[in-house]
Amino acid sequence: MFNRGRGSSARRREESQVSSTAQALAKRVLAFLRDWWPVAAFLLPVLAMQAVWSAQYDVAGHAAGHLQSATPVFPMVFLSAVLLWALPRRGRRDPVLWLLLAVAITSCLVVIAGNVRVIDAIGGATWSDEQAGQLGPARPGFDSGHDLAERGAWGAVLATVLLAGLLWLRRLVSATVAAAAAAVSLVVPSFIAPGAGVVVLVVSAAVAHARALRLARGHAEPSGATGR
Image (tube, rainbow, N blue to C red; front, top):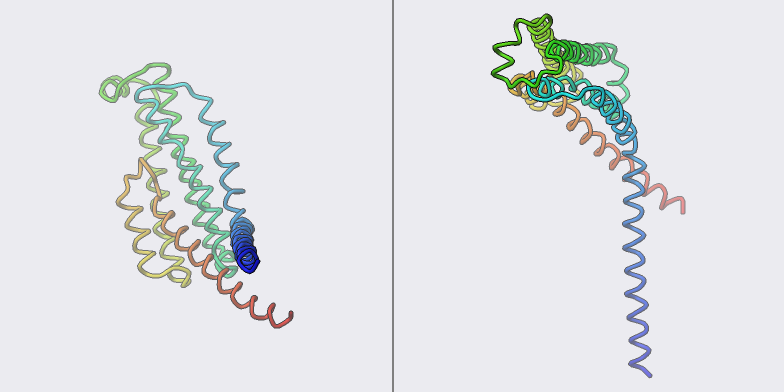
């Protein structure tokens, strides 16, 4: 009898521990979703818009490369939204920040315009890169499209470098993060990912945002326990 009693008591303790673990895990998941759902809310519409836009074109060869190069505006819009959301209120209210993000997005739209001009110049031809280099200049819009896309890409790079400097001056990122963002923007080829350094800024802002949430939650828990 005593053994059965001790066995049932041990099972109850195990069940209680499992239940507590499950409840703690569920609370963490719910807290994560409650804190970070805006990121998904920003991402899904941007992915949908990119899919709809890309579906308008059925291209191959050199033109397919330009179609891929035309898409940086979509991640730039997403990353700009996440950055504005993750920054503290004093950062979000800075008009210069909004201006630089608008310049970066507009520059990426210029990249789209230039690449689409090249795609239209190629038409339905499935040129390789070598063929495009030889035959493309004879097509109206081919060279001007390349030039326009390049200018837009460098505009996005410049806007991102200035954005990194602004966030450092406003003490919203460290000098190391700002320097890393500027370096990434300059090192990563602009025709692949113009303004790629904005990823560094967003990650830094998101980490600081998560830290602020943990601190706020830590301050709230003792007061909640006192109230109980």
